[in-house]
Length: 360
Length: 232
Image 1 (cartoon, chains in turn green, brown):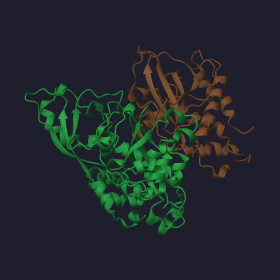
Image 2 (spheres, chains in turn yellow, red):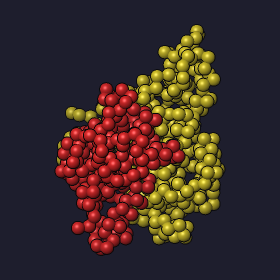
Image 3 (cartoon, chains in turn yellow, red):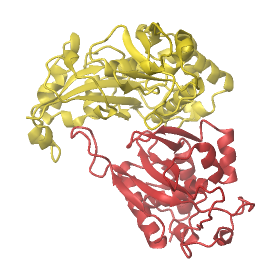
Image 4 (tube, one colour):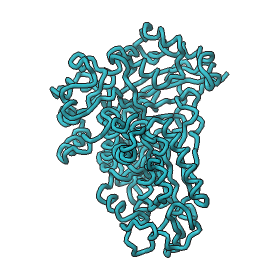
């Protein structure tokens, strides 16, 4: 609400929007027709952007080496075709257990894997994938997506250009008109103690649902490793489970922590006992063990308290890492703050969780 | 819940009940057509949140009813679609098969009704292919659509039907965008009970829903099925 009405970005939002991943892009060897092969392209990829948007910058590095044909561009990391509709920063957080800088990706201009990836017709495809995600997020937040559907053409253009160019201030100007304020943020709550209503919403007839749009990604590690950076590479999307899953902020909002949200998303990893005392355990803020204190110990005890599925994983399934926008936030941070400050421009909060599951 | 406060959405459990109801009615009245089948979600990691009913409703290998060429698509007269010879005679769905002249055989459709937790409504995912299994692209599929739908597809290229990842199969499928569904479902179901002062018949939800989205593919539910939606 503060952000929306005053148009001022928070410091955290500025970091998120300013965040970029250095990429070193190699042309796939099957498409190299020149000797010597072209050197890799070095480029900065915005965290909140999408890989196909970089193609106009990358193409000149390789255009003279390509075989004849029509471009159908896609990217790959260690054999895994990358889903372009997942924001670049999220792909990085999910696939590089230990941040790899520069991130070495392979680009293909031919042979699009149509069975696996949604076709991409360049910027238009990305723009509409973005807008349709924004619509879905708006629906989660407001119970309808009228504000997105009714956006003027010029606002729509401005919004997209701000995402394309990474201009947070311009983005917030349009965003403030969309009335997508989420509940559970401390500042908003102070201003509007009755979280369901404020003057804007009454005027537009919107009732806040108290839901926050979340895209949860769970990377499963089947080996008994101690450090998250020892995780084996992801060579198939089967190893990653992801889902759009609204998280309902319960109670007054300010007491609802990131840990509560993760519990709501993955209840099977938590036991009754854990839910009682987990809040008092301050997780460490260093390195990859953030969630260890809060959740993994508790998951050891899962076997007794949960029905049906529980027996299958009583042997120590544990959360190794919770990563959002490249950082491992403390789990006691209010979830409303996390959502407001770390969400992507399409209003989804992308949460990456590494889960280790070892069969005896 | 009273009709006036209902927002046109369903919980997953209500979706499951409505799906069972719909597939049962379909089976009774369209016994020689492909059947709607409940497909359980693939086995996932045990700690991933699912409930025992997780899955979606699928109608596979459906040969679309075709209006004979030159007929006005707009005519809603039931008899219009029954003039062609058909294996499906006397079925409740007004369907008929026309052998296409392009030598490629019929077009077969897989339709999946998948519950969306964001929109809290069913979402239709579909794909189409020839008899030999070769997938059809949207510009070919478009010709199977009613004129209204084809026009909408041109007008609203990115907001009516786009390719999306099937939430269960993780492969590109076509999807009918669901952002307006709850709104028109409110109108459809609430008006049915407005006089009865009764609760919304949510178990009939899919029946009503498909009576609308099925029209994109020229599948019209017979009056006998639609009457099931109306108050007793």
